[in-house]
Image (cartoon, rainbow, N blue to C red; front, side, top):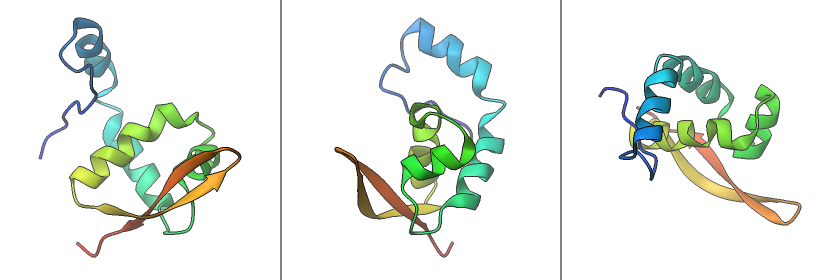
Length: 91
């Protein structure tokens, strides 16, 4: 399965250009995110561990989920927000 743009705006020109710029870094980010998925940490906590804002890596969770490498096993409330908790699949 190749790298695909799963964003809602993937068909507009700005999104196409932005995706072309970042698609070479996506596999490395998949690895960084997947290494930190442990079934306990939320997406927000993983973003904090990586020193990145959540919007910079939220797409990586969606992509890893679509590749059947992770599944959502819960949510965690942090402040007034809910964040997903993922677990690695056995594939």
